[in-house]
Image (cartoon, rainbow, N blue to C red; front, side, top):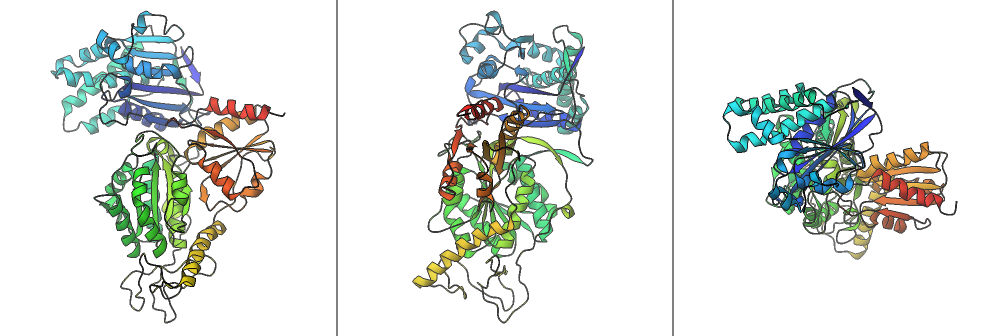
Length: 611
């Protein structure tokens, strides 16, 4: 008997060497091909190799998939796969009553329990009495499945993640074909290892099919989609493709100058695959060299970007000021993680907003944008490039670890489907041209490559004369240039859409969010609206400058609550920018995304006050 579900949440958890990220990704690929909505949340240790078998070394991959109700990776799993005692202990607090826990019984030895910090074996106590526990000797069954392939013990053990994946495929009525194709490609040069993984996968599937313990299994309904070609995409892949598309639309090469840093490195790794498309990737010796090479590439007429995370952003600060002074178009991507210092490299946070808006010396304004979902990273990379080249200004694009590693289905777009980008590129000699001649509407200067005949000019970090670009220490000129640079960025607000919000008939509470928590905030507000609550939702992607109608939207509501994964940076920015409104806050600083249930509880509390 199979039970039909609108959506289901699965969490794969095990030691860092158990291959949980791989099996989670393979399950995600299959559900995407089968047509499900999905959202994922890879969660793994920051340490390169935390002590094996300990709670600190647990790696997890959560997926929420189905026909509807997929606003994020989900609060609590319906099924937890715990490959060892540490994985069980790390996730116990998150489990809801009656959920299913699938356990590798072979890994619950005395030493394993001690490493995890269990005084007694939880399989022999009442600790798991409220859950449906399925104990499977995964390790030993995997060894049996591959026994005649003469693999060493360690190699045979490593196939147990595929056995587990096979059980989960059976449990949720998903096919094996996609995963078998992946294994064949991956182990093309080592067919014996490929055969071992396929055997383990099929053994797990058949185990689920034949034993009595796993009943009922589930059939998760698939979503209705618009016709088109879809692929599963992560936020970092989506950013890379958005930049490539923008460069192709402009007709200029894409240049990335960057230094690897978690969780931004995958953008570079994706772009380096596409030299065929004219992409140029320079892995610099440090963050400063990375952005300075991008500034040079922008000066030479390339679509120039640099990527980093919080600590790298600090190192790039001075060079961002140089790009502001030179008025060159570059995009700086900051994939945020928990800080300060090295902080939490693999955990998510939204704590670099202040740094993005104000974190430079002097009066140094730049445009700041933020992406919302893994797939819309594509659109925000494209939009950041458009603004940079049309307004001749650096643009900081904020992403988050939560978006960078998360994935979802994405309908592939054609370059011709994207809006036009019209840079101020000047190639023809003009006897009246001056380097700081400006578009009267945008105040953007022209973009001229060095060496263009009769358009020679100088730029640099020293203050420039407001017209000729010659070095100027004239006090009045400096003040004039400071105000021009500020006004140029402010006028970007004339070129962006008005702020939208969900809940046109609401008036009591407006939920405000920004960046990668979009899906979970939308889910919480949508469910409360369906319960008849007087609540609306405004999510911001244009952060500096703000959309021109922001104050009109805020004025419609009695209360405003700003939700973000920091101590209140966007709320404080709004207080400084639109001080006529009162802002409540809901904040979380745990390196984890919001949960839908905690948001609903917080909003219900505000709605109940003075009602």
